[in-house]
Image (tube, rainbow, N blue to C red; front, side, top):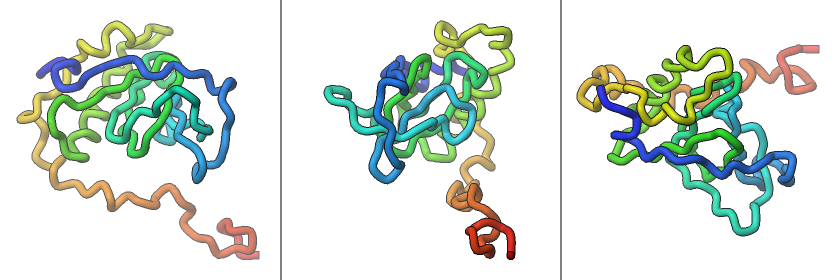
Length: 165
């Protein structure tokens, strides 16, 4: 086992406030990552912020507090982040499968942070498996096979939903 900080550079994110930004569509905006538990942590898309460079794709984000503490996601597009969101940049070359495995490993420690306790001081010290300890099946998983699974099963109805009327 090794500490998170031995495999990732852990830093605070942008600490922007969504209510001070201009929201826009996903096609036109930049992802805004918050402490949200679902949707890859993306709570909105916003217009570019003058003087603030978005973080690059390939970084993990981890919620340091709130209901979704330690919700950890791989960000595949450039993004901004809100308050109490850590950015974890791999210090070594990792495959997408390995990165997603580490997202699960970090999130599995969330039980330590109940009753309002935050991970801002201790995220770097959490223990995760070393690269040689990753199970063999992880490298055999094809993440692309899950593409589109968040869409409805059918689009047969006139309104685009599942009804057939």
